[in-house]
Image 1 (cartoon, rainbow, N blue to C red):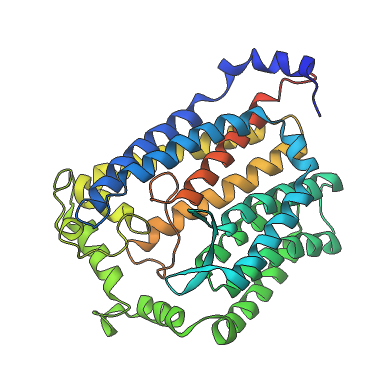
Image 2 (image 1 turned 180 degrees about the vertical axis):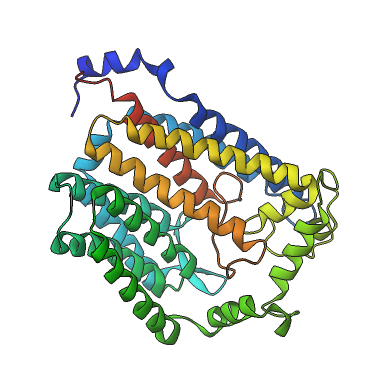
Length: 370
């Protein structure tokens, strides 16, 4: 752990931190705040004040995460991982249900999703484990340990049942293993195992409504007023925006309440209807700036632990963006995967800011002890 004397040189290099990461987060958050207001303006509750509060807290958490030496976080990663598992078990016992899944916990008047905290803790403990191996190519037993680290919280979240959140653990494992070093033969074996597990999940791990969503994705016209309603309305909203959109708060699908969960999972559909193709390209461009900046941070990190930590954080964000943007146009089945910095949500928003702050902390400390 770095001492105060070691931290001072790093603080003098604050101006050298990749500003693209900070700029993309602030712009995406501003666009998200405006879109959440538009999406919820015709709802009983305008979510703008709440989202503004989450963003304010998120910025403070970003600064706090950036200020903490990530090696200290890695030192306590096992404790954080254990706390995350305990919270996931408690949610199964006494969680608050939303949408048929008991994946919320309550502390006083506040509700939060332990699965979001568990993702961060899993990334930390996996980065600690893989960086400690110090091998160019991982052996099969080491890979199996990494799989077990990720599988435990993933299964607990799946049991809630929350298929969308449980899926988020897969890109964490894949991204960090690829960077840590795996043989092609083992990847092929893993692909076969994944197919077998997917078949088992379809038969025994998915609820009937989840299987219906997949079937509707394959053939949405079979249930246009039921499970296929969401994707149909989303496609209408995206398509009607055309090149430049209908204008802010002028979208018919959102303002006339045709589009479900428009302030969370389908926030991109609202933006596409109001700002058109150009608006979507702008948002995707900002995500590209975020990814490019985070990739540069990983490449210039001072040690293997920093590289792996940024890789895990970036992998889960990339999957969120890719899946959500594909979901709103019907390319993948609908599940509860929100869009980082745009979708409404307290736990999800704050975790995204903490992850970004941790990346900035890795970037800042590349100067320490140099």
